[in-house]
Length: 272
Image (tube, rainbow, N blue to C red; front, side, top):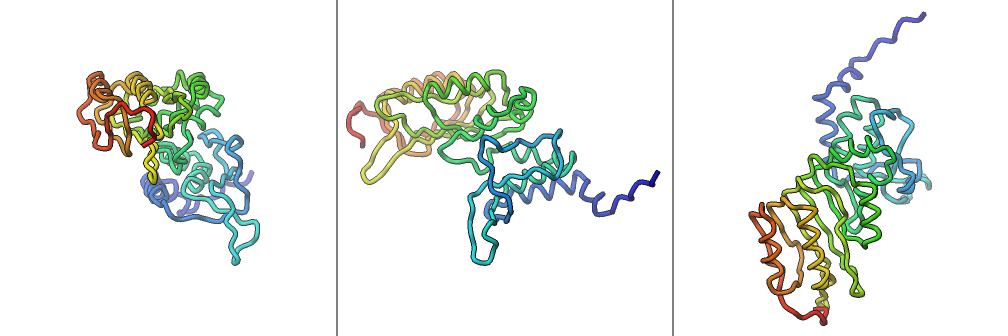
């Protein structure tokens, strides 16, 4: 029987939680760099989710499309910090334990107009793993959707607890055609800060979320985020007279409502 191979000092150092935390924190803070990869990006539905049970050096994921360069091979792809963190999570168990909370906590590199967080969680078949990742999320971006899509999210996320989720940005693109949109039904009872980002187009001024749609959204926000203390509108919106006052009065924990970009009127016909 051969004696065990001695562990190199560099390997022992890279297993120290204190050093690992610093390394992963610097990768997490790097929003600009990209790194080359020789494997093509995998489509979202087939992208594996790393866990402490599948930590090896076989998996990889690229999260930006091919960016060809004259000085690089034709089949070179690039990935950003999310891809870098994903690779770190697949090194071994200690690296996975430090990296996964960074990878999940604030919806890294998510698209402004898509529900990356609920989509990723809904694709995880194992409820225990789904809950493990959800418990790491501290900040999320959600996008209002049609009722059938919201029902699909509800079926997947009904039992998921977001134990550390404190801040949500709710993107409201507007349903159009007189339809209503829905807030993805996450369990947001611990959310304290809600930023509402309605779609507003200038030249000409166009309010894409209609009055009636706001009435429905306010009602859903009261149910999904009942304990918010701060609500901020990040872009211009137009609601019925008194709608914001009624909304604020029903939020018992509300301390601050930033409504400077909201106007109240009954003009439900003109876009601007």
